Length: 191
Length: 64
Image: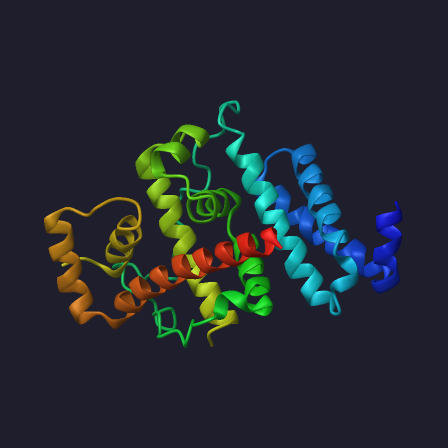
């Protein structure tokens, strides 16, 4: 509680509530379990509060808690290898009509164009905010496998075993996740 | 000749497994002519590098 008060000095209640809601919706997307999601958010917030006084701007705090939250979720997912059977590949159905035409060629306007300089982009708080928003916009299963593959660096076999997916389903999900993520980043960051 | 959808699928899978020789050949033929798929491949590499950089800097800030 003392830690909470420390944060209130710098941030308004409604801003904190809003931040917490955003974190929860992000965590729920990655973790199918409401309690696990709540726990991850609480732990991430508690971790961030320790350093709350050093954040001069809200955006800095938000990026900081989200980077902690991503790590918490990664820890939970690593421990989830023996979860019960999940509904197999609910996001495998094709939904890329807006990207490709009937012959499988890029739709007009969807063709990837050169991204600008990505040098030192990893240090940009704004970029990771856009990234998180784009990740949240993906269908849940696609976001989850992308996260497991790229952030936690599990290999295909580990992810397939964990989620009871076939290798081919996993590759479909990753393909769709990457198509949409790069499209979203192109629209909202690299335009 | 691959469609762009198939080419991007192979580009994505090349991050998961080594492509076969014929897959590589087909992909090379396609990307030689298709700038969109060429950029898609570059962007996948950029994404992976960005995430690596971000994790490295997170680990460094953990130590402080």
